[in-house]
Image (tube, rainbow, N blue to C red; front, side, top):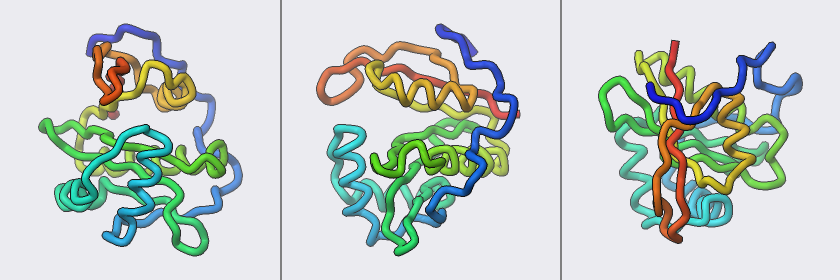
Length: 168
């Protein structure tokens, strides 16, 4: 794998916080579409046809994780797919602002990586806006490295980084 930026050193312990986040993980449901679409608009600054979520969830249902609050309202999600043999790709990943830094993202990512390993995937990739330093730091905590610059990648013309990590 070609790397154009350093990966963070392996963390001394689990990237999960010591206390459990105030959410539970479950699979995607059609009733989640309005919540997911709002998260995508707010956090990712993108807008997609609502039918996209249900069609992608049909491809790998275990790859579409929902983090729901105690009343079962989605407050975060991770949507992963497999488009290349033995490789998972994180298409979308977002957590509501008030739930950030509370372990929700780490729980989603750790669970997704475990599910990818269970399917014997060898690699996970994702794309991130070059301006999103917080997300880039988060991904490096999970051993992702920048492997490519994607010019004009986002709908507003912003560049993106492709990041990747191998799975042991």
